[in-house]
Image 1 (tube, rainbow, N blue to C red):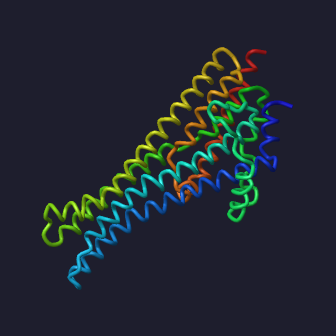
Image 2: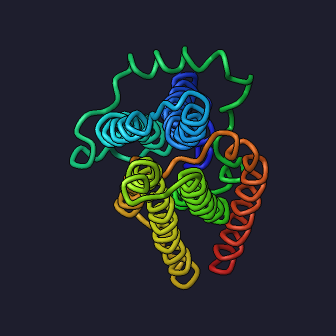
Image 3: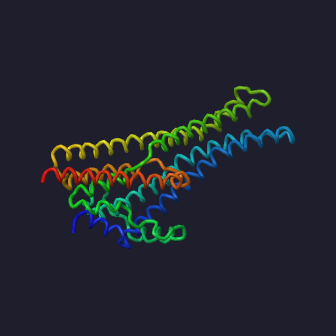
Length: 310
């Protein structure tokens, strides 16, 4: 049995479907935390600012100290609790994805990069939690079936190529949204605070301090998206150079090369910026179509190159 055929057989084993289900559940939990972080940061601060005006005009009661206190507490919670929790989930999910890839693609585990493999109890637990949302056949046939025609190590390279398929335009759009939301929030805070006399003290308490959590999460998420695009481009560049070398020399990459690429994929996964589920689901079908088309193209070119040597 060829390497490509082995991959297609192993990917649908129940224990490997279980890993994909578990990592999806963990990523969803990380995204839910991010969503909560966004809600308690932007809308609630704006609502409190409007509520402050109503209280001042109707009851002559000022809560600017409450808004400033909330913003400062939120800034601390974001940096010392929420961010660490999201990081914890991303690393756990990346570890399970790595285990899936190593077992399905038959790539050795890098003990230097990841000292311990994910606990089977974690995989079982998160898989069970995800089953309520799981659609029948959702994780079957993870890799494009065309790789069955690739008998050598290039099958692994093609699968790794699938693993980093992404739409950079989506991440760039998210970066634009982050800038727009931050700017609109700042303008609204200034406008709300300007009702009445905008003294320096009011500007600090009603604009600068409330905007700090918004600025903090915006800057972090913006640069996470930017770094994710950069990392994916670098991995793609490495894979492209391997492909170009194969076209010129017919040289099949060895397992050391596939392990090195896998290292970069793992490092990207554990640090990459999250894409909200509603965005991911919207672009999913289009991504899968692009991915299948890309693999079909590579396999077709691969066959042509090998036929020239016969």
